[in-house]
Amino acid sequence: MNLILFGPPAAGKGTQARRLVELRKMVQLSTGDMLRAAISSGSELGKRVEGVMQRGELVTDEIVIALIEERLPEAEAAGGAIYDGFPRTLAQAEALDRMLQGRGTGVDLVLRLKVDDEALMRRIAGRFAESGRPDDNPDSFKVRLDAYNAQTAPLVPYYLAAGKLVEVDGMGSVDEVAAAIDKVLAGR
Ligand code: AMP
Image (cartoon, rainbow, N blue to C red; front, side):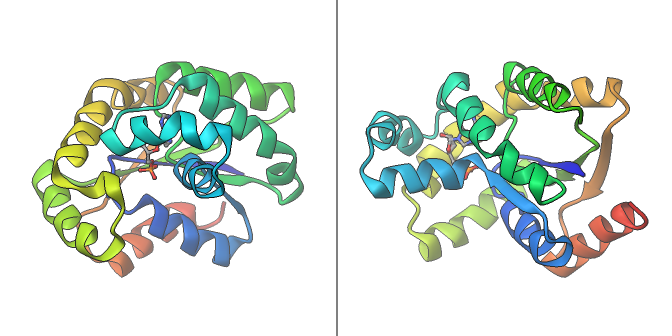
């Protein structure tokens, strides 16, 4: 199964993706994690994206599409993937459809975690203190939220039209959201 966990930054996508990986033995494909690993390793790619990420802007489609493409064989071998933080633009969504089609599969389901902006801002204030992630600071977070609203939210009608979007209330506790996700995935 190819499952996209969709939603704004700090909606809980990473937390829920990691839980599903344990439960369903799927591969988590998080472009954010891949980019942070590139920065930590000091690679050329890491150097290219560090400033952009720190400001909270999106890196280019070309970069993240290539990162995902590299991992598709591994995901396929595992029987599917959980996409976390990808796709974030229409061009990325179209590229994913093309890449999966080329492998004889496709996106099965897009789980949209709905959390309102105020709750996100509250969450992130706590997370910044704990994670120390540079792009969790309030200024960068605002840019990330704006990027989501301008560039990523338009994927909602795209996946809705494809009949693939299911919404889950993301405002509850981690366990409550997990239960809502499991309900959607039951039998799949
Ligand atoms: P995340 O961990 O998913 O919140 O991603 C952290 C940062 O990595 C984002 O704010 C972007 O700068 C970059 N990033 C991650 N995934 C993507 C993507 N699919 N497209 C563009 N930029 C991305």
